[in-house]
Structures are given as C-alpha cells and as structure tokens.
Image 1: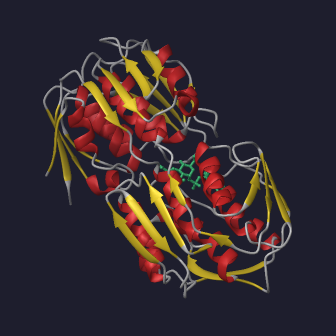
Image 2: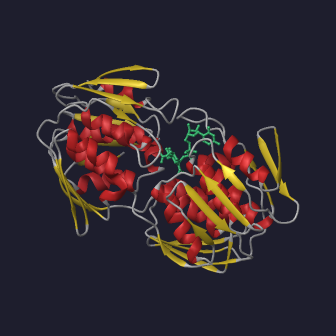
Length: 417
Ligand code: EPZ
C-alpha cells in the first residue's frame, strides 16, 4: 500500500509538461492489435493502466517494448483472443480490447467488467452494437464469449447514450468489417478523434470522429504506424486545480484550451485568469476563489465528469456555495467524505453535491477512493494547513505519471511513502 505525503499551505507556482492522455493511449493500444507490423507510440505516460494493457497484449502474443516514454508494438504474431480474469481485473477498461480482437480474429473471450468505484459499468451499448455487426455473444459465469462467423459487417448504429467506450469499441470492430458502419450519437471526446487519427494513419477509413456521427469504411488490413498520443486534458485540469486551490499559478505545457473549454469557463467564473500561450495553458488564481453555482457533468463538450472531483477540491475554500450535479456516473462523490476529513463543508444528496466554501482546510490522513478522487485529495492537500497523507496511492497511479513529482515541480512539498 503506497501513500503520498503532502505538506500543504504553500502557494503553487511553476510550469510542467503534461503527460500523454490515459484515455487516449488505452484505446490506441488496443487498436494496435488490429495492425500488422510495427507500431511506435510516443508520449506514453508511465501509468499502471498502460502496464496492464501491455500485459494483456503480451499475453495475446503481441511483442511490446516500453522505452523512455515510447512503446514499440508488433502484433503480427497475435495468437490469442482470450483475456484471463486476472488480467481483466488489472484494468477495468480492458473492454476496449473486445472490438479490436473481433476485428482482427473474429472471436474474443474476456471477463465482464463488473461494477467498480464509480458505480455499475454496464456494457449493453457495446454488446448490442457488436451483435448488430454479426457477433454472437454469450455471457456466462462473468465471462463474455464472442464469435462472429466470417467477417463482421458494417451497420448503422444509433447509440442511446454517447458512450465513449462503446463508440471506441464500434470503431475498432468496424475498421476491418465488411462495408460501412455509421455511428450516430457517437461520443465526441477528443480522445475519440485521437483514436481515429491513429487508425487512419494505419490505413483505416474513418470520418467524423469528434462529431456526433462517425463513419467507418471497412478495409482488409491495417499496418502499423508511428504516432504521438495527445496530451492528457484531465491531468492538465488537475494541476490547474491544484495551483488554483493554493491561490497560485501554473503553465501546463502541451495542454490546449479547445479541449478544456468547460473547465476553463468554471475556473474563470471562480475568478481565475487563464490564457492560452504558444506552448500551453496558463492559469492564475486569486488568493480566494468565488463559488460557482451550477457545475453539471455531461458528455463532451460539456463539463467532464473526470474533472468533477478535482474542481470540487479547488472550490472547497471558495467564497460562497458551489453546486455540483454528477449526471454521468451513479457513484462519483466518494471523495466527499475524505475532503470533509480535511475540513471541507459538503452535503450530498443523490447526484447533487453542495459545497459551502470554508476559510481553510487542514491536513489529515485520507484514503484515495478512486483515480480522480485521489487526485482531488492531492489538490486539496496542497491548499490544506499542515500534513496530509493520502493512502491507496496505487489508484492515483492508474492515471497519473508520478503525481507527487508533478506537484513538486510546482513548488509543493510532496513525496511518496
Ligand atoms: C470513459 O469511460 C473514460 N475511461 C472515463 O474516464 C470517463 O469518465 C468516461 O469515458 C466518460 O467520459 C476511458 O476512456 C478508459 P462511458 P467509459 O461509456 O467508456 C453508461 C477516468 O477517470 N453506459 O461514456 O466507461 C455508463 O454507465 C475514467 O479516466 C451504459 O449505460 O464511459 C456511464 O453512466 C473514469 N451502457 C455512462 O454511460 C454502456 O454500454 C458513461 O459511460 C456504456 C456506458
């Protein structure tokens, strides 16, 4: 069990290079399974979820090598299509391997990704789309056994909800399907466009990624390519919130305002000054921010659910009362109890959290409840008086490449135990 210790009460100021995006590198790694030959990925963050994905790919027969932030993959000799329960449990979002394996081998067996810290993680949209494209799927004893006779065929798929994972899985399965697939009400997150850009560089024919309608024309085969993964917009938001929580300032090199408009708008309403420079995003916060009345999470380009906990942490000391509505996941307020241990004043009722600003937070022993909740506790700890110990740091490592090193670069006294 690892912990992160932060001696708070110091105004953060500085700059840092943002890591590659977790939610882009993961689907891109599964997309590499579709490709013959060598793929080289640059700007790969050192995340436990990335290592888990590489373990899954190695178990499937891919050759993977991680060297100074680059990943070299050769999926030519892919020989498996089953992902063991143990490997599936390493990384919840391994469901994105489903579409790639079906596209490459026509079959796949993996565990049903059970509920996790954010609430149930259903995959009904994934399965109904893949069934429509010609896959027979049986669910038994927590395992999904998927097979398609011959090649998948293209379909018109209307998603009832713009699910990120379902959009990605359908794109992956459709790349090598017979004919054309049109996904309407597709997720519009920037990571979807990044995945499409990678796949098109490998020879796929995808248009409309990033818009509500994505069209994929199936091709017979895909080759490897060299690609640089997009910067992590949620990690960028995290360090902006940590600086803002301390009344500080930060230049996040590599981040772009276009991908964080909803978060930037909230931080500006809270009294922060922001600017996009030639090499990144700059934010300067007032000593004490103003509360923001209505922050409601929604699919991109709305306010990202992944930024909810970290913005809440930044606003715990704001002047006034902020209201958050978490409309994407059922159970994404598990950081609230831990923030209250640090002196925050937060009331939750179902999907609503009411945050009354307090003058100061105090360091405490807290437990990271999940990935973004853990990052939120780190941000709050930077602002809290005294020492905070955040245990369960492994959960934070799923999505942050050494968060304590990044915070220290901004002047925080952060270390890992
Ligand atoms: C992706 O998860 C991200 N993970 C999540 O980031 C992110 O919070 C989420 O998208 C929303 O932006 C990765 O990209 C690896 P969804 P995903 O399918 O694909 C419901 C983080 O912290 N739903 O868009 O699982 C679902 O229950 C992680 O980096 C169905 O009902 O998200 C949820 O309420 C957390 N049926 C909502 O849609 C389905 O078949 C959003 O899910 C699929 C989803």
